[in-house]
Image (cartoon, rainbow, N blue to C red):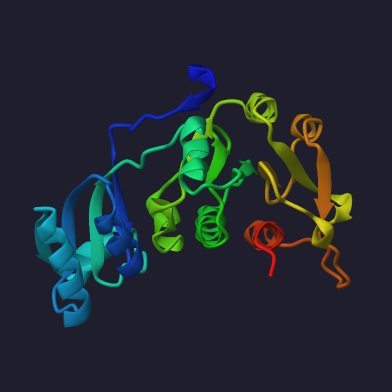
Amino acid sequence: MKQEQQEQQKPDQTEFVYGHYASVEALKSTQEINKVWLQTGLQDKIRNEVTQLARKKGLVIQQAPKSKLDELTDGGNHQGVVLSVAAFNYATIDDLFENAKKQSAEPFFLILDGIEDPHNLGSILRTADAAGVHGIIIPKRRAVQLTATVAKISTGAIEHVPVARVTNLVNTVSELKDRGMWVFGTDVAGEDYRRWDAKGATALIIGNEGKGISPLLKQKVDSMLTIPMTGHVQSLNASVAASLLMYQGFSSRNPL
């Protein structure tokens, strides 16, 4: 992909990863960590696990009262552990293909068209890791980016699922198709997702929480999928819909 369409940059800013599981996964990864904050009086099991991992990396460990950790995380549920980290790295599209190649699998990517809620992105990352997705593609603008909240909600999956950030999703989808991928979207008029066969090189687009997939992007898809509903509410949360679709993809790629 052309250099201007994607980024692999690390902005000069500090982020915080917090929560027991998210922090442990970050400490086990190659993420650049500056400092570890532990709440005074933290239970021994969590303290010992985090301390052992931090010492292996030669990190500074700072004891602090709960009020300090609350301040660092804007009142987030930190569970007594906060890591000061360099801003999150983004992958390239080539990195996503390489990730699939390392697993000897046909690529299975998720494209998020303007997801705005960090809780949705974190949940999607968590499910993507479980369902064998090889990478996620997000737009640079008008969408949530990788943040401490995303990392927390992903419970560590952010360290295992590469995320590529691009400036133009339409151009990116065109390139994916040129590289042999089938691209699917979601729409009320699509085919029942339970019939979806995601074998082969596949990319799935999940639209914005309110607007769905943008019109220009819809023109690029090979086929549309729909999730049938019989209740009064005719829409699902973006992360829930993504989970259903990812696991249908997983099922078709890994039949019983």
